[in-house]
Image (cartoon, rainbow, N blue to C red; front, top):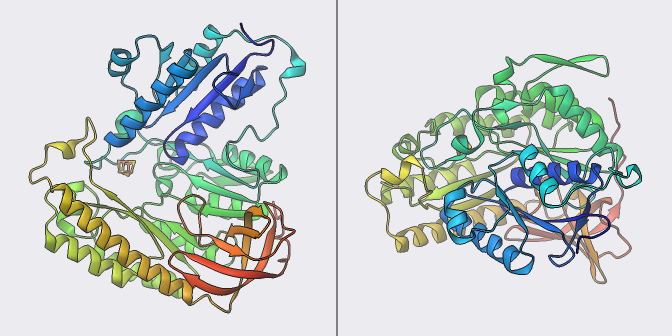
Length: 446
Ligand code: SF4
């Protein structure tokens, strides 16, 4: 029997970009009077937002659809898996299957499954929309799609070419988040550096100011909101150099997530990514001169088809020189539909495993040394969680879910508190310390 107030459950898999898609769908449904259910059995229908980036992610998505079918039985599938034939072969009774960011189709499928109840009193959505993250941070998606054609990636095929949101639109959303108490926005897209290219970097009006749809101008304006601004997925175009001074001025967190993927010119060529490792090292050195606190995060793929031991050692050597603070690593996997599947010389799984372990051990050592240099310093920490023994949070150098934590021995803190902490100890990717005060509130200039 349908609930008096229709309830929708959601299972959101994959990356932060997919999480934002889930948030948009829920915001829309909430505005139409639907309630959100945290359990399968309380839901009238369940949306599974899938990931199809790697074969292992596809397998996880199929498993999640299976679980939702078994536990609830009324299931709407959306997201990057986007393979209706394969899904229906195993689960013929799913209610609908749509691809990534087809919000309208998902909402229509929900309407078909459980009609909305027209009652304006139920249609209460906070102005900043609904978020699946804790209340003190939120992802801010600035564009969809990507103009690159990396051989291991099927994202452009799923999400299309770059399509940026006008700057005023992004800033409106960020301002609403700040007003709702969000302390940190994490700027995401497939290619944050390319932001606005598709719109000719056209300006839009925000609070009487003309703001160009371009990374530097957007970061500068976001920096006026008085909250932490963290940049993810920044492909290293030359104009990325322009955001480093904003980091040095404290407008934007001194944190850059640049997915380098590799350093060996041969492997980068096979990946169809730009290969100028020397120039990149030089740029990183200059960035750190301008902004000594800069934390650089990156991800790498090991065991890409054709990667030799020499290529891999080249990568290790490059990483040692680049001294990247935070590193994530993936063992190469075929992805259905990706060009790299057809490349020669696929690497054995045990070699991939060995290279993964060696890369992550070097990354741990670098992170450990760079963390130890923070011992004795006082840094800002945003509290994520508290328990009876203390609290943990993150500094400018830590993005949620993917980086380290700062563990504090103090009690009486709340998630979302910003504190000053003196660092006593560092190990691997994490820091330990205690609270010594509160920072001056950041001034809102917008
Ligand atoms: S830049 Fe990123 S999203 Fe674009 S094709 Fe390459 S890996 Fe895929």
